[in-house]
Image (cartoon, rainbow, N blue to C red; front, side):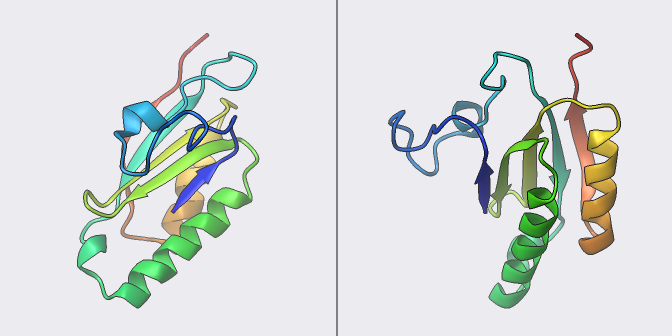
Length: 117
């Protein structure tokens, strides 16, 4: 699952699927403002049956699609990690994490970054 509400970076920039996250995840919005981001671990997701993985992916997509602050999201099944980049807004990360945990209770926030500027 990938969500990207940023300037097109995939084929136009010569970036292929599977490229390292640091090459794909935006750090600034289209106006040059720094983005906030967070990472959640979803333990043992990749070991689940395909239908459960699909259900979880759909739940995450539905939640993230409701929040206009979300600019980019990536679900890495190999690492069981969800990465989300968003436009900073007070409380946005907390709201998103709480919404995700309601529908995917095993998800755990492991890192977040908000530039104070």
